[in-house]
Length: 197
Image (cartoon, rainbow, N blue to C red):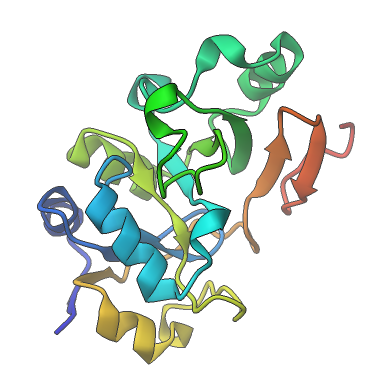
């Protein structure tokens, strides 16, 4: 049975032990686990009934938590400059991943990984308490709408996770922007994407 809590330490303990938790993000509630825990990542995909080839977003509180996941040296300088301008913030970038993750379910076996350096204090603290980057993917069944109201999270999702952190989202008003550094294209425009880009 799912445990409901507002205690970040409890949520971190659950995640560090290999668990899966519903957590608030900048705009919508998400499902989180350790990004490097392949078993937990597979479970998140099953919980959402998501196509495993799509990959999942990884969130971190610092670039050091992304070491070993992204191939920083393979990112175009123009994209790196954009990341430095927008981070930390609700902006996800698709970048080359390291060789270790090219065949991973985390990346959908694509050779790329979607990463975000968050400015949302709740999510930053959760990453810090866990000591590493986390998966964050909307807490909804695949094909259903993401929600920013905790009371609207699907009972089926809550039944399948270990813990639900019922703290509020940051209030972004939608999912984060997603920018593909390989194509130089904006895949998803979030509420905070700068008008001058």
